[in-house]
Structure formats: C-alpha cells, structure tokens
Length: 328
Image (cartoon, rainbow, N blue to C red):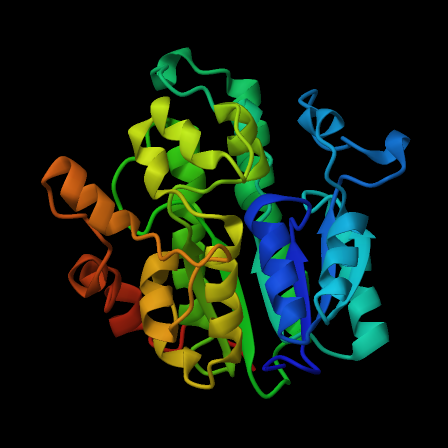
C-alpha cells in the first residue's frame, strides 16, 4: 500500500544506518525522499565537514546509492549533498525543496557522524574537547539548523511530521558525557519543538532503535547481515539486535498515521511502534529490547513513560506566560 504517495520527505543523514533505511521505507510507501549527507560518489567531495575527523572517507555508502534504493522500492529518491552543520547549505537545500514542490511533509533528523568521536570508557575530564565539540556540532547543532530552515515549508500543509532519531527511550545516562548530551538533547528538541508547534498542524517526536545492526556495527562485530548471530559470541546482547529497517518501518507508520498528533513531544521505540502498528523487522523477527533487558538483567526497563515526562509539563513559563511564543 502506498500510504505516503504524494508526500514530500527529507531525511537528513540518509547515507547509512537508520537514516538510509528510513529513506527506503518512506520510499516504499510511495513518498518522494530527499536523501542528504556528505558522502557522495565524487571522492573529492566525500568526508567534508567540521574538524579533522573525516571517517566517511573509509566507508563505501553514498547518498546516491540511498536515493537509488528509495526509487527501486517504489518511491522517488533524490540525492543532495549537504553538510547540515553549514547553514548556507541547508538553506539552499530547503530552497530547492520549496522551488520543486512548494512544501515539505516529513522531516527526519538523523545526522550523527559521531562514531569515531565517542570515547567510551573515559571520564569527562579526560575526553578530547576537540572531538566533543565536533560531535555536538554534528549531532545537535545540525538538527537545529535543519529544523530552522525546513519547518517553514511544513507550516501550511495538511499534516507535517518532524522525527528526531536518538538512542534510547529513557532518561538515563548513556555512558559518555558527549554521547549522553547528544542523544538526550534531540529528545528534548522534539519536546521543545512540539511545544512551540502545538497550535500548528506539525507534530515533532523522537524515535529510537534498539541494538542497531548498522553497517558500522556489523563491521565492528566482524559479521554480515547473513551471519549476524555469530556476533552474540562477542556480546550476548547482540542476539536481541535489529536491522535499521525496524525503526524505519516505525517512522513510515508514524508518517502515515492521521492521529500522530497524540504522540507529540515524546520518544518512541522501534519495538513499541511495532506492537502498535503491527509490523516486523525486515527479516520477519520482532526484536524487543525492553523485554530482552528485563529477562537478562532481571530489572524493569526504565522507559520514559508519562510519569517520566510529567515534570516536563506545566513549567513556570507554560503557566505564567502561556502565549510567550509568538507564532503568527
């Protein structure tokens, strides 16, 4: 079913991992998808970005390939090179979408680029500030810049959706100061944007995969998608992992849901979305990271439920200055 036929989507950070899969699943549902990132088939253009950490030079995936996959699945993929930390490039991208379609229906902020920058195992007073600065630029600032220029294209549509892709649907610490800041910040971005969009027909929310079998993670474990179960010998938790298409199917379901507004401002997991919308991973499995966590560690999974979000609502600004934001 082409549930998103005629919809115009932008997946910022569509080169690989969840971003690539989300672009593909939006395309499979019939959407036109702008696939952006820094990795192109023109070698001299690849790896550009802030700082000296150019890990993209070593990876084979490109935005052109993603766009081709989108088209092959029944949508229309459009590859556009853009560094989302550079405002002028984002502004030009959004101007192109406006000129070609006049609107934007779905924005997915999946820019990351922090794998080689995250120094797990080191306390914050020993971390590289240079790496941390670049990580925050790539993983938070890029999302803000993109939303700033993309959202005006969504305000006059019938129904818009902004998806922030994070890691974890909980408010707990994530093992590294900069990584924690990045992944919690985009959850807060979804909440803040939803708050300011409450009078508009645009919904902002966040989604998370579980243990993601991205291209980088498969390489890390020395396995392929065909042999991924062998990775459990290195980390038993890998047996509960999922392909990037699991959370991607969740995003496609959210984009097609006429009642998605009720989810505004919250974070949702791939496994919970699968239960609600009735889909499986692309391999037919139904991974459930929360259930695996409970079974393995004999502890309740600390999901960010309504109780966790309670203190985020009805703050002093909301109560004393309900019309603080002038959105006319």
